[in-house]
Figure (spheres, helix red, strand yellow):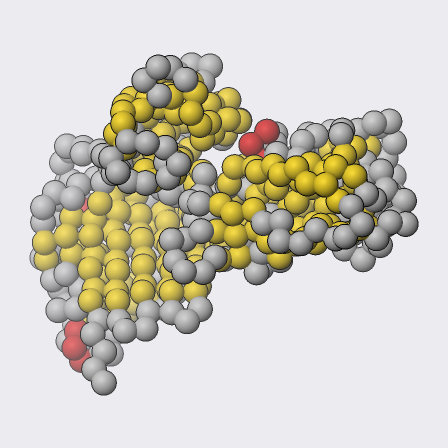
Length: 497
């Protein structure tokens, strides 16, 4: 059986910028000693790691000068910039590419199309201006898709003018899926330092974990530092044990992160529920910390569980994603809290297949709250009597908020037109924040009635997207409005069924 593979490289842009690319080689500066330090983030729940890519020498291959580089695009060892075609080229032994493989046409501008190797046509649609490491510069993005009978591959690469490769994303979906990405933490380019080039977790964060009701210290458990990646995964950056006096010390990279206190897995009697810093079960309301220096006094007040564990009631079910297929996909790392009135009775964290089970519950009317970073919370009310409750499922549509464009910080607030528009049944709304902001993104009908709140919480500076699934709403024109302390904007969207 023949396998058909289709490759496509596209350079894409959200906003068109006009400027003279006087030296396209500066999109990947090649000089011995140049160094790039990346944060490697694989598919959750694996820990992050650092990757150091550095030009360590040069050599002559087929009368052409190549630079030897470590850890560039996973396996590439020798690269050069071809001045005739303005293309970044790697040396390879594949005869279909005549021993050279064109990677990226760095001088490409809007509408350009080239093919240095027959399997890899490249199309460019422009560049973006951006702010990174305190410098205004230009960003060029390449995406690559390949399809065969068994797998779908997707890659994305961002290059910064004067700095080099800033971001790389790879995914493959076959019988199983694999996803990873790298983000530039810092670089040393032609003698100039950008960002943080240390490859160790050098910042420390300390604090006390205590009970919210009486301020007494928690004597066991652990604190995790994690964040929501641009592809929707939960990336764990580090974890630390809670000491007998409630103290913890966690080591982190220079980054924006969230902290959450957890019970020890092996403890039979649950004493407190997983709680975000400073004191909330909702990820949208968590207090983000930015570790540009060592931090102290980052205390977490957790909610106590009131339950002697003598009861045998159980509420179970699953947390799932509805991906418009015939089967539901399990969503792991969701937390299901069980409350009676204002009292927490227990909780469960969903497994990779989405299954959860809250055990040792007394009889009563329960409020079940399901939270998962990146998705809106859901609440269900159920009465637990003599028989256990099963099949109490939480089903999500698309992801609520993601960070699709790497770690670049927008220069101004923005609210983009939804796409597609008109739409049925779901649409995406992008917005940008130049600084950490309390943000609310709301859908209204034409009578001014609030239909849905897509985002309501404090978000760090960055580029975001929210998705609205209007399956339960009728055709018509709707309004979406973003509001923060410094910015308000309104746009229309059209639902056609």
